[in-house]
Image 1 (cartoon, rainbow, N blue to C red):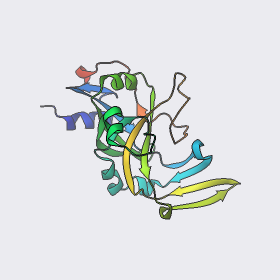
Image 2 (tube, one colour):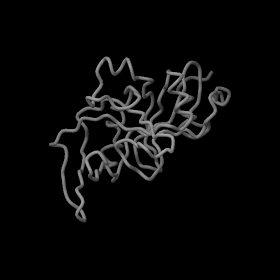
Image 3 (cartoon, rainbow, N blue to C red):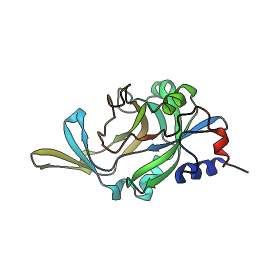
Length: 197
């Protein structure tokens, strides 16, 4: 008997490509947060997230069950209206991606339109977080401002951020060179047969 847990494992180990349709949902590998140094264009600053903090077991557990939404809400955190209008799925499994040394997860997407856009490779990810200034430190390196972020007070959501037609227009908060945060290697709409492997 195949269960959703088998689907999570198959996606994690690459037995099944992402995204994968199984039963009434599409399952997808998602980067939940970047780690290391990245450029935050909205603030014109570099930011550092320590993998020791963001990949710790307690932090990983906090990502479980986060809503997956299309774009960040205007207010930064979700309202009931935002949730109803933009939620397309939830984070159902979390792990550390060894290659990126960053928290990744498996998202269960129930919205067909969003699943199609995911399969087309249109999205990157960006976590909605609230971080207290007391958990941050600022410094300057080579004349550039660097914000060192500690653990967040609250993890609110995972946003699917539309990268645009050329794949580079909007890559979310983290401007990275290591590829998008949505693993959409399989661009076929229906991968249900492979899910049973």
